[in-house]
Image (cartoon, rainbow, N blue to C red; front, side, top):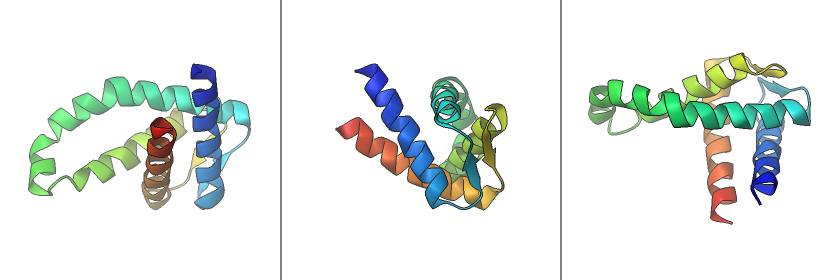
Length: 108
């Protein structure tokens, strides 16, 4: 079951790259590796950054979370070989699309 979810997340990432200009994925294996890296970043790095940026998040009523997600999406693209995220706008749109697709996959 976990393998099916992993493949679905990788396909969602590939669809995100197809939809958003500025995000390129070289292969399904790169997408699968990126899913693992995104999961690790979301598990270990994101909570620390959210605690550090809590005052800014409160002032912006949570909108700053989009910036955090985009920067972490760029980090995942930088770490993963075979994934290219060209700019902040691409990362912002990509993180929004991937988050929505991930939410749908998790609900199924």
